[in-house]
Length: 149
Image 1 (spheres, rainbow, N blue to C red):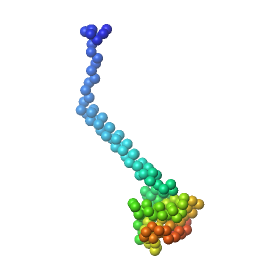
Image 2 (image 1 turned 90 degrees about the vertical axis):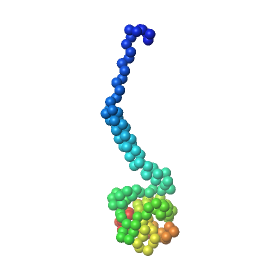
Image 3 (image 1 turned 180 degrees about the vertical axis):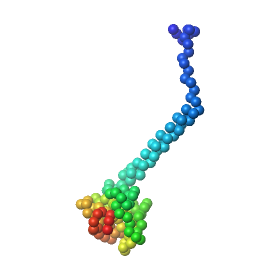
Image 4 (image 1 turned 60 degrees about the horizontal axis):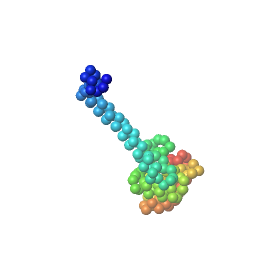
C-alpha cells in the first residue's frame, strides 16, 4: 500500500501531554539542574586553587577544627587571613620553606604581624613569622603536630 491509498489509516497521533505531566517534567529537569549545578559549584574552588597555585601544596581549611587540611585554630588575639593577605602570606612562607604544605595563615599575637603554620617536606611542623609587608622574619619549629602549639 502506498501513501495515496485511501485504505491506509493515518499513523496514530501521540496524545498531548497533560499540564500536570508537563509540570512534573519541568520540575524534574529543574531539580536535576540544581543538583548538577551544586556539584559543579563544589568543585570550582578546588579547581581554582589548583590552577592558581604556585606548584606547592596548600592544605584546605574548610573546617579549621578538624582534619589534616585545617588543623588547629588561631589562638586568642589572632585572626585567620583571607583573600590577598592570605595569598601573600602563603607565597612568602613557601618561598622561605620550599616544598612546605601550608596548614593555615593568620595574624600573630606574639610580636610578628603575620604567621603561617606549615608542615616542612620532612614532616616536621614550623611557623613562618612575617612583618607587616609579608617579609619573612623567622622560621620557628613547632612542638607536637603540625598547626598546633
